[in-house]
Image 1: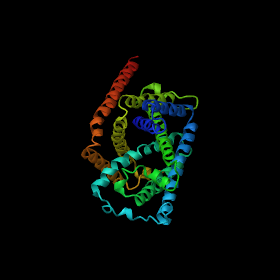
Image 2: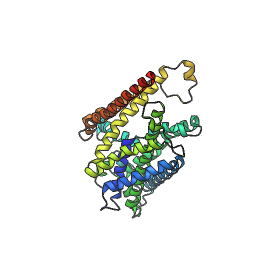
Image 3: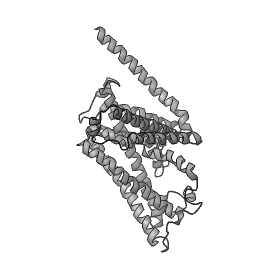
Image 4: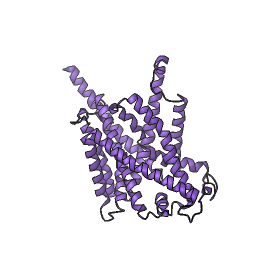
Length: 362
């Protein structure tokens, strides 16, 4: 979650260049991190309020683009009255022009786009009626993916040939501009800016709660147990933000490559996290009696085959990262990152053992 913050504040620094090209990228990245820190320190309610408005901006923009794009496809508005149709879906090389390998390669960036979704589980500790609200939120994800991801991609790919999208600019901007909305570029830049801030917001929130939970179980330093006036894990927030400052340093030292570095870490970290979640769920179910399984409020579907399928998918993504030259950097950086985490954990574990022996002697 901390690396996600690094990635998103880097994105903010890049997006702000659109309006303020002369301001250093690291300054806007630092400002974004500072603002999101305040949001998370004040109260959970403030975090939720910001997240609501951030999400609303994204939803309204995407739904608007889908509706307007659909009008162009069916009625030809903005296309001289000629319906655009959906023939671009199978022309220009046919359906799946890059074959199965193209689909598998795309999975890497798809996984990056979904990083942070697992944070919904972290909210259980502060949600009202989590046994009802969490399953409801998770079940709605399917429809949200269908509408916001598949729907928007369907419209974009219908209107513009896939092999031109990389050179003609943002498809969102093109669709709005096609309908005479001249400020489309500024609007879309604002939307992606709020999306980056939203992801950073979630990263700080979830990272702080994870640290707090670890400290409660004596698996992290005791100072992380401290909470603020509104029951916010204050030291967890500050620690998460403190590590995320590495992202600001990247933006200062290597602004042009900062996004690539932190994105690589995010993807490889996501593979590890999701694999651990699936394995933990698997082990949890193995240790339950039949009676306990039947009483689960929200059991995993297709256990254990669902677990195996997810692990196979994550393995396939890792293999594609190794094959693709641009994505391979993540596999080079990962050993150093995980090595640092492992060393930190072992040092803490050794200190905890020494403290325990001292207490026993006394």
